[in-house]
Image (spheres, rainbow, N blue to C red):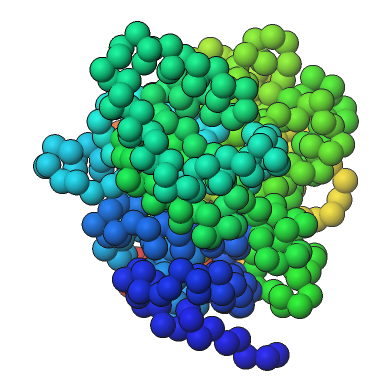
Length: 619
């Protein structure tokens, strides 16, 4: 393979270096930056399509604004790889999503340009509003910019922040919508092209500011002019909503024309105040396979750019794929099933379901609490909703879990995907907390499958329970016997199972670790209990374990503090059992980027680590 040459990009170690380049060289720099991104991410894995779309935008922002004096907040971070490269991390990009390497998302303090961690969507506008307010309070004259994607703009937190910002007309805050998917991006063409030329013209600023000074002295004419402007803009621009929220709307602007972007951004920087710039881009820009399949190239494995991403047969063995098989089977039997996802159709393996049962599929966007509220309405209306949500995003829906799910005792099933250690996505995405925060909620049944067969039966059980039920499963491969399991096959609520009988030591395992420990426990004569249920606990089984063993080791892929192991210890103490309880789980610290297997090994949550814990006790 020919070695990549990036002579312009090699000279950029900071935005100051970027601003030293003549504007005429920036299109070539963008080409080099895009090529470098493709070359590096194809070797490291990571997020690709969104970053390719934001190359020109990142260059233009750092070229026009005096970063880090001017503050820049990127929503989520999928689109921010070019920003990482331009702020001095070109060589380190090859370490992204690895232990002690670059963080997967924007991380507070990684550089002076990153003031806030942004791993979850829809937070950039609120954070930028706070930064802008802090600058105003301290009498600073800098600018604050938030860059939010159209997907993140579907989250309620973004609109809460936009609504709040409208109350402060004298803040210097620019919100940029990087739009590469929503229908409003179709409002382009001849009109948009003409608007681009107007917005990029330096005389535009003089016209706007001069007009404001004249109209300030003529209030009656000013009111008429403002109403006329609003009506005209409403006819040709898709920004009326943002104008109503108090922002001055500009756009749409071609986000891949770096020189036009620079001219527009300069004008908006000069104008100040509350500004909203609508930029349209193309996900995967510059790499044909990603342009044709931006969803498939959103997060990529290691791949050959000349061949593109190849099919991975092992994906069919993941717990996510197991859920995808189940929901299609269940929807075939029950037309009242309603499958719901908050913008995670592919990640949650609901793509096939969406194609086969489009009338039963609902993608609510990045709006996790709304997903729970919406599902409660469907259930109350006679349907049977199944919500699939990543554990890390379920944190944002906690009120919906209590108020709209458990409290109302509706027939709803919540599938918690990515529960436990997720690996390279890092601290913002580890699913460590759902056991601790779900088990405190009354009226929930919470199940944890040890393999794909058990997952299928548990999903059946939760669906047929006709009460609030939860099934949590990790981002991992699972064992599958391959035998046919019908959608009617269930398990008894609150009943675990003994997988191996041993002496002295018993392991109460929650989740796939039960399957992983089987051979070890058989060889070492350790009792292995697949607990199956976090709630209700199989108390009869715990009584038996306590009576016949010296120690019970509780193992869960979740936070130790507030976890199920603490509940078992409390139960044993209340009954004055002499049997000792040890707890194994995720410690009280944030787990950074690394492979899932490496993190589990370091935390001694793999079979070898569990054996070491047992040996330490026996010694």
